[in-house]
Every structure is written in structure tokens, then in C-alpha cells.
Length: 357
Length: 267
Image 1: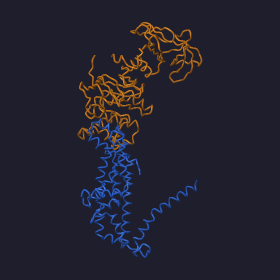
Image 2: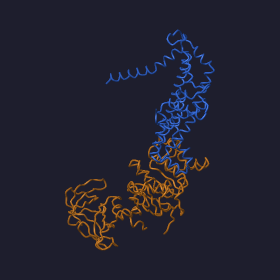
Image 3: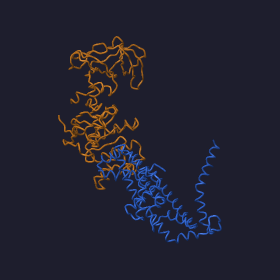
Image 4: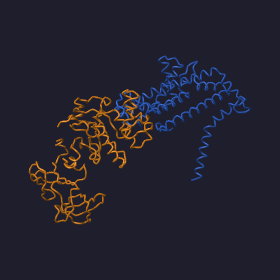
């Protein structure tokens, strides 16, 4: 089913001072979804946001908005609004005037401005704060003002540039729920930039994982978590055990000196691969019953589970999340299902196999 | 430790006494009925009366204030434009060069500025008088305003401009609705600075005043040279009061903007 794309990047490259920040990127953004651009700092995620907002132009390639190229359309003529990382509230204006800024620029009538601003403030639970100075607001409140200031203009796409990074942990979790809820109620497209994989997994419909100016993988949070396409994604999203292995034939893979049944196919015979097993998919059992035999090196209690760091005879490190306790120094067996093994092609840092949905 | 503290206070007091002594001395003798500055004979307000009835003096006061207000207003506009220009210059090198050229004008001796203006004005045939004084005052005030405004611009987060553009503002809106309101405290500081510099400038003005036009500082100088009259003391006392008033006024303005969270920088 082909949905209408609001924004389309077609082979977009961005070069700053001779440095390639975005390298030949193409993707579609659909209406009404929550997208997350996820990656380490310097991966180009903020540049994508600035390109969509219109603060900068692509060096090569074309950006389409509703099918029309918008490369040279300045930021003030685009139907997108941004929530900035430092909120960028105007210090000389109070809360009401900050939110009203965009409407005043558009020369709306006073009554309409008042109504819309109040509605936007209600949306972000800031009723009664309209006469406050933004200086007296807490971080979380400023965040809400920034969101209200953006959504009052009824953008088709809301861009959020790491908006939660300045908040403390508890507030950040709260705001994750609120943002997701807000997106559902407004029904507009959110494009959220973050380096925090938990945020990305919790909120998104669709995640783009970026590294070194390329999209490594795009997909739903579950796809990204369960089926990472390469070592980078597997390593960046959650904790993983990643090993080199050889795909002997379909459904049979060799790693850690042993052969295992798996559910992956479609590789060349004897193709070298990366193998991922998530720590929570490993179960502690006796040495005899385990598929792998390891020695517990250290153990941490993490609340919901114990985190064990183990080594096998070849010196490979195995991270295990288990509700069962083990003893440090104990020899144990690790059991896992064939489905727990995820086999990935080895890629030279590039994300072939970009979007297959 | 404690006695160190005490000596520090004494030292401070001595320094202030030495600094303020001449002014106090001057003001004290402005009430002297004796007519000299060594024998205090009795208290009188005659010298103040003389000052108040001196119409020539009042015209000069008016000139001085007109020049000060006009030159500081014009140089504030030019200085803000200059600061914006320096702020928007992309190349770091160019920025430093412009800034350096600006600062050289501030530190270079007034005498040299005055003399060079005199040469310039006579060369291009501008009559010495109101215009020449005004132009030279504008010239030495602009760099001061630039220096006062630029830090405010630099402390402004660049995302503020992005945010305004994002909300639909064009270049003009960005300037008038975001940048100028943000740097207003700096603009006020620059204006007041230019005002005080213009009011009490002697050296530059001395070079470029012609016949029939004079400002207060030049007039006081020439009267002092003609012989001691205590009306000069009275005049100086009045000026001192005015300066104090200006300083207090500026203090309150900067306090107010500091409270509203915009003027953070206290001087």
C-alpha cells in the first residue's frame, strides 16, 4: 500500500567545509507518523532536520515537499515548525507572546491569536501561565512553551531537535509519554532527533538509524531491535553480543567454534557474517544442557534482572540478562533458541539493504 | 586577617578622598563670598546667581546638550548598524580586522583625533562650528556604541534567529522583533556612554570649535584662563550634580533591565 509522502529526500548530499555530512540519502516521510532520526553525534541527524526546516540547502540532490522541490524555499515559507534543543524562547517576550509570535508575523486578528494561543497552551498543559516571563519557567515548562509555540502554527510536520536532552531522567520519561500522546492527538508528522536509543524505541513508528552521514537502517522499533542489518545498528540499539561467524549454508551458522541451527537464509555458502544474540535471549542452565559453556566473570544486580559478564573458552565475551542468579567464577551453560540468533552481512560501514518495507 | 581588612578599608578611603578632594574643594569655594579660592569669608549664592543670569553661558549649555543628544542618537544608530555588520560578517579574519579598526579609534589620543579632524574640515571646507563639532562627536562615539552592543549580540544564541525564521519571520522581522529587543540593554548602555563622552569632551571639541560656537568644557577652559572667577566653580558644581544624576539614572535603568533578566551585565 503506497501512502502519500509529505517529505521526500532524493539522493541528498550535504557537504560542510569539504566534509561530507550527509552522503547520498534518500527516504520518504509519510503523513501522521512519528519518525525518529537516531544516531551518535556527528552522524548527520541534525543536518537532516535543518534541511527539512530550510535553515540550510543540500549540496546535491532534491528535497520534495508534497511532490514539489523545496531546495531554495527559505525557512519562513515552509509549513514545518521546529522545537529546538535549547528551546530558543524569546527572552524579551512572555509566554503568551512567545507562543503568539508566529501568528503575529502572519498578521492574524487579535481575537484569533488569543483563541489559538490559549488552545495551544491547553494542549501542553500550561493553562494559566500565559503572563509568566519565560525566565521564571522550569526546564520542563520551557519545553512545553517551545512545543506550544511550534504547534500553534498548525504545521504539517513538527521537527524536534533532541528536545529532551536537557531534562532530568524522570521528566524525560514523562515527556516521552506526553510527546507520543500529543502526536496522536494532533495527527501530524513528528520528526524527532535523538541519540538516545531508548527514547527512539519507546516513541517511534519508524526509526532511521544514521551513522557517518548514511542511513544504516530504517524500520519499526521492533524491526530495528530484532533484525539489525549490521554490526553498527546491533551495537547502537540496546546491548548485544556480536561475534564473527560463518554462514555454512541456509539455516546453519558457525560461531564460537560450534555449529548452530538458525532461521536465517539467503547467504552465500561459507559467507563470513556477524552474529548477534541479545543478552536477554540467553538462558542460564547447566554446563551439560547449555549450547555454550562459559565461566561467570562478574555479576551486577540491575533491578529487574542480573547482568552477567561471562567468557567462553575462546575468550569471547557473553553478556547475559537473567532473572536467575549465578556465582562469580561458576562454570555455567548458556541455552538459546534458534530464533535468538540473528545473522547479519558484514558491511564496510555502509547500509545497503536500506528500506524494504 | 582582620587587620589586613581594616587597612584595606583605610587605603580605599584615602584613595577616594584624594580623588574627590579637588571637586569638593571646588564646590566648597563656589559658596565663598570672598571672591578667591584661598580665603573663605562667608557663604553666598552670588556666584550661582551670576551663572543663572549669564545668557551666553546658557546658550552654550544648550549647544552642549544639543550636540550631546544629537551626536549620541546618531552614533547609536550608526553604532548598532556597525555592530550588526561585524556580527554578520562570516569570515573570522575580517571580523577581527573590523573590530581592531574600531578599537584603535577608542584608544587613540583625543588630541590626534581632534587635530586630524581640524585638518580634514579645513581641507574639505567645512566651516568650524556646530556641524564640525557634531560630526567629530559622532565619529568618536560610534566605536563606543559598537563596543557596547557587540557583546549583547554575541551572547545571543543563534538558534533564536533560527526559531524566528522557523516561525515565518523574514529578515526584517528577525531584526526588529528578535535581535533589536534582545540587544536593547546594550543599545541603552551605548547611548548613555556616548552621551557622557560627548558632554565632557574637551580635547576634540577644542580643535574643531570655531568662533562664536563653544561647548561647556571649552568655555570653562577659556574662562579659567582669563582669570579666576568663582562663577566657574558654581558652574562646575552644577555640572557635577548633573553627572551624579545621570549616573544614578543609568544605575536604575540597568537595575531594571537586570531584574527583567535581560541586562544581566552590570557595570
